Length: 63
Image (cartoon, rainbow, N blue to C red; front, side, top):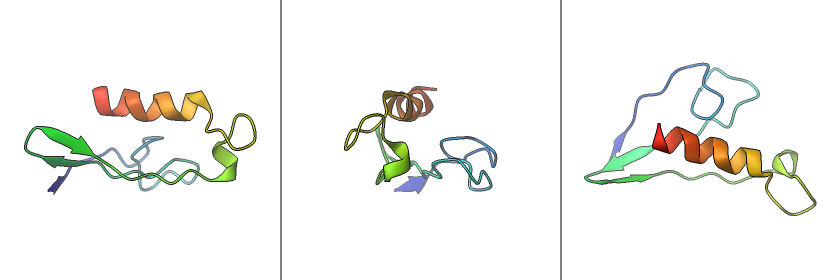
């Protein structure tokens, strides 16, 4: 797998963004993967990840 490049201040993938998700995406042939473990600060309702977080990740992958 090869790590995909990211922009340092990106909310989803930026390693220098202190309030970002800091996700690294990997490419393996025709597949993209990543691992993200949400914290309580990512909740909309108790125990449910906020839809904005989920769709930010999806937007990053599709972009």
